[in-house]
Image (cartoon, rainbow, N blue to C red):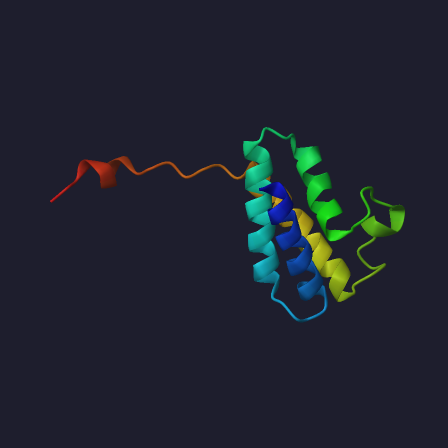
Length: 106
């Protein structure tokens, strides 16, 4: 399934950076891919590399990439948003079921 999810991320990234798609579509695709790779037991750095690779992004950061004023283009903003979403999703804790909602049944 990761190949299909990677293709969805690649397609959503292309549309989002060309103004043909929404960033929300990309974020949803990234989150699905991250969950799947995490479920397979991949460590966070491998998951992030897979997400970047799916989008055709450089796999390592360069000095200019860390300068917030260097490039404020739409593709750069979308890329940064996608990487942040991948990291957030990887470390997101699952919600626990509410004890109160399970205890009360009318």
